[in-house]
Length: 84
Picture 1: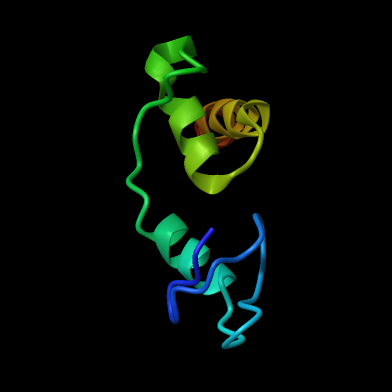
Picture 2: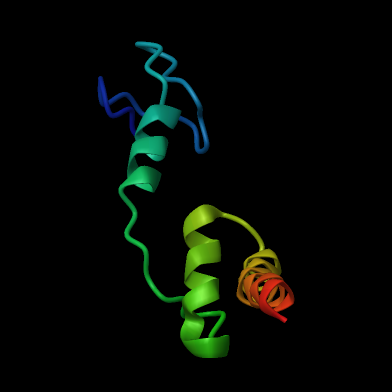
């Protein structure tokens, strides 16, 4: 790994440069923020949409799937209960 500020050779997975002290995590956060939202290649259930959202947010795909089911069912139950 090489420091993005001073090009000093760093040990793998270093958080700070040993020479200039630059925070290497800043670049990782910037790259993560610019990461595009794409369908998942690994979690292909329902075209990989929930898997892609889970990978983008760095959460478990099961949590995303449960939230999608909850958001889909609950509004219908609430509206159906009001007009019934």
